Image 1 (cartoon, rainbow, N blue to C red):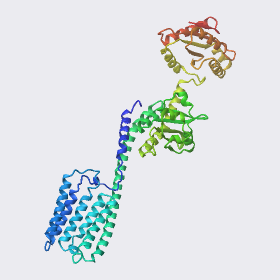
Image 2 (cartoon, one colour):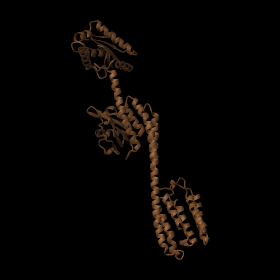
Image 3 (cartoon, helix red, strand yellow):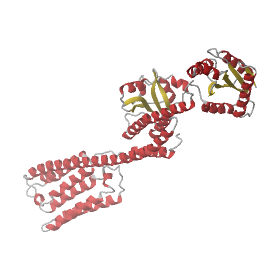
Image 4 (cartoon, rainbow, N blue to C red):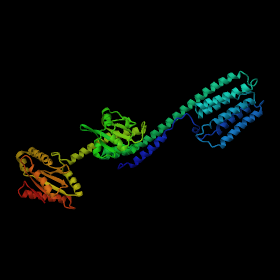
Length: 515
């Protein structure tokens, strides 16, 4: 968890969970797309048009058929009003189309058959299904409208339905199908464009929110001492990834230098060979692996420990040069990555390049501030911090002070350059006799300090005697040592060691005294 920016991470997670729902599939059509429409509305529209057509020229109408047509509209409208409309009821949009065709056929019969003038109304049924359903529905309704023309020609015939009507029926059917197909294609394209626009707006809003949140994470990274770990933690928080690593060249090796989400010990992690990351580092090209089981370059140790399935390797670029690789991996299969995830990881990889550079610079500056430039040993500042930490821990601790005998006279006789060489030689010679856990620091001038944790006074005396005898270039040194007593402050144990040093100098130099 990041020490700051937790609200930003929560916001990222919230936007991540909502991003998938923003996608709207451009379906071929659906009755539910009409924002609450029901079959009642188009039925009433058909009925209103038919009533207007009857009113234009009512003379000569057979009102029995007009009444039947009205009954068809009324019954169907009542059924539509009483039946609950469900979004998955794909047959509902066909109800007004079939009812309209039946009613139009009755109205044609009520007033002269082929010459009645009601036939053009049938195109509305085709257009209706073209708008709300798919191409199969267009073909079905076109076929039914063709039956509306063909059945009277076959069963009733002349004079109301002369044989010349076949030409009109065939042409009308062809034109109706073309019109329906064109309308359907236009509606599908419009819906697809609308869906793409909504998706694009949702993605833009999501990315804006994501980058607003990431900027907060980036500020945390820029202020953190361990930029690599913070970048990896940000990847986990913002992309739902299971693990994240940063791999970089280290001398002649290429190794993982930062990670999050990997339950491996540091030594075991250092033994992992990041072959895919190395390939990305060499080429500077991103690699996405949908199934890591098919990629031999992915470490089986990491796969077994984390259960990852898919992984993305993003180059970390600084000043146009690839300096490392950021890897994010997921435990759920992914055939591809959405644009948001890719953008977030690209952003974090770019931030990683700058953050690692800042972190390394700060680390170098801190090292310089804690290191004696002449001997490359810890300086007084670093010694004080190391001593304080060592005395906080339980266990035996010994502290020693070493002073090069007659160093001022050595400088006066041989020059300051020779004195500097003697100081460097003493540092190298004495450090070679110490353990990695011990600390040798330049305390000031020709004085050095030694910290020996987990070491008794007798053992410390033996070690320091070896150091004293190893003093190079014919020089000698005096040593004072003290063992920390329970609860003793750093300044007090150091003062006792310093007093023992002065005792060694007062009793003839080139010797060791214990407090």
